[in-house]
Length: 479
View 1 (cartoon, rainbow, N blue to C red):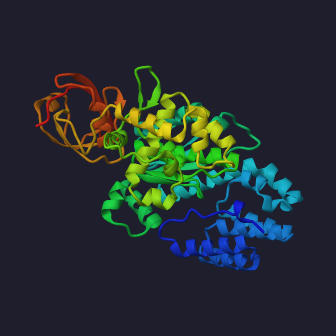
View 2: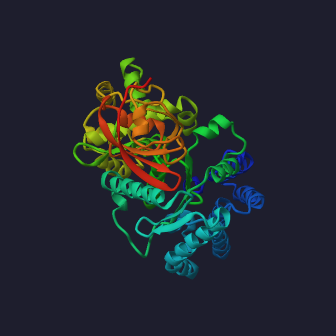
View 3: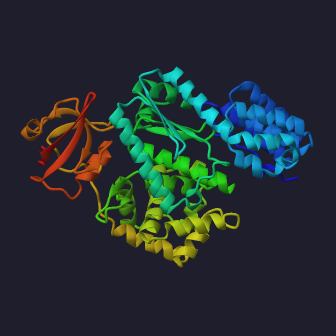
């Protein structure tokens, strides 16, 4: 009997390889019809990690398939106590069909909205215990997002506004099925943690184990769908990218689908660099990622979309991942510029079971064959503007030496020109905005400089400890 489709696959951190192996073996036994072995392995998995809900949910499925609805109810409640919060899955999972005929299911369904509210209150209380009273703790009822932020009040508010902008854009241009709110069937809450550097390093070690310092320095955050918790120390591209995953998961949970990695990461990468365009709209813009694709197009080395869309997660993230993220972003950026992105997502999700790769939907909405789309993307990439980036900085700046971002902006390490002194800058200041646009890291800072010229005066915002300040500054040639 084929049972794999609705079994949960744990989103386990790299340090939990033993648990991952147990789950893989359990799924293999389940797929082959050996329920006894599958249950035995999931019980072992549950015994090794008392906080895991995946094995308990799968045990509930196994009990329901055997006709033991009381056992299914008990295991399901255990899964819920440990963090499971996807009622849509309970409602649609074919293996829980027998359980859904019980009074227990009816009671659980009626109590679900109140349960989700209690769960996020419990998460916030746990965050207070972990991070302490100096964090800002707030809720966005409309987005069903709770925040625990170590940043000051103004910076925290700016981060929340950026999140709302991303949500508005994503619902308008991609996630058609999130443009509603049903109080009887609400989405699970997600907790967004914006930590101190010390807390972030502790989270990174706990989540990923002992990883090289260089890897840690490049890690800006992550979203864990199992726990519904997003942790980000970078309030720019990382926060936008990971929050987009929150929305995407909500969309696919409602649809009962699981999209391939190139779609997940390509869409999330799309919102990493957003700006107010000349049309006055909040839109994706060219970035260091599009620079790399432009160079590949010039060398005629872009991958074919059909081959790219069939790439496994392991290959996508393990072999030339920067190229893969950039290419996926550019596919969706082109669709957006063709005013076809929303149409593509609707077409794709409606035909998902016929073609989960997304290529047929792409051909349908563009009316191009895969080979014709490859050429269209290449020509579009060749015409992309090249923007300044960290690896190729301009000989233009604000007369300071900047260090890597600390989360809310690049740090002024040294004043290198009189214009910076006249503008009132000091070493240690955090640059947060330039020319009316948000700046949260060096790549964003250099991107915003693109198109500006020496001698031009621009608005600059910065943070000095807890004070937020603004000034105007003359752009100068870098020495």
